[in-house]
Image (cartoon, rainbow, N blue to C red):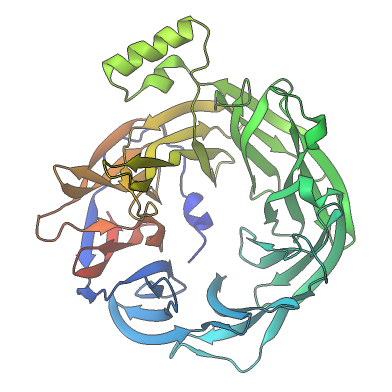
Length: 502
């Protein structure tokens, strides 16, 4: 199942939990000849012995994309997905998993319009149904500026509602116009509504959207001040949530933290229908200095619970060398800002008891330029994926603890291909799995946190020099409450593995 919501519900607070890395049994599939191809996504529906994979060639041009079916990690079916660029027209095909159904999404963009259509996928042989459903079609405006328009896609927690938030073409000085279309899990249209966001297109950024089990759509937006009105070191943006149903915009609410800057923000929905809002805040607008969380009544938009917690000096310096710790503490004593920089807010994980986990990661991507003795210059792009941050929220909305998982991943000119982490929820533990390099070899590291924030770690796989396998975290998938699939890469071949947590 593509959505991990049902697994997140298994993260239950348990007072008797012991801090230990879960026992994990690994079954490897056969070597897959890579031919410069990678699996970019894994999908699973009802039968956990069957998985579906999206495989792409790593060509710069004329890239080939395939849908594959595996049974017990053995390839049994393969079809090529459409991806064409002909005479200014682009055709692309992707796969959507929705409530144990698979659909092919057919995206087309020409000089005059763009459209998205869907066909049901017959899993026996990966063929497509003859019936094609139009999800949207938008015509472009002549003489346009920034008018291509894009869309957001959202799936409800129970996977029975699907929403598309589609930005219309338009002049950059005009108001943002959006069409919202809501479908059921059979892709039958339930309602659509065209709305005008009361802010200029050039000053409006749609951050994300979610849809409730009842089919109400919430759009998170950031509205920036005009450049002429901006003042240095003052907040130059505001965050709003638009609430939309079949009748249009029914409410608009601002999200604010009084004298704090909201730096990173995400929305989710509880099983009771409340809105969950969490993220990181800044004192001055530049670094993440603490975390916040609030539960909002979805009907009245009144805040039911709200809590904030500043990051302690011990939290900020955890995992640092003695020298770095001393330097950071000295900066703090002088009143200088020592918050977290380059933090990326990854997930709000909703727990069964009504609480949540906030997960973030340090990501810093930058370029350097060097010149040799002959005057030749070269540019290097650096990818740093470092520490993981985990904040636990209780059922009554209180921040109980914040933990940092030290991690250092630095690569160059590879797009961060093997970096970041894969997250697995099992019973009362959350497991973070990532590549760790030691003496020119990689090991597959597992760091586990239990409900009390107690941490343990170990190696899931210790490599040999000959294989030196690395996982691609973005291509791994949890398929049940106790099973997940790993996709790993070596120089000569790729491999899939099913891991069972005992």
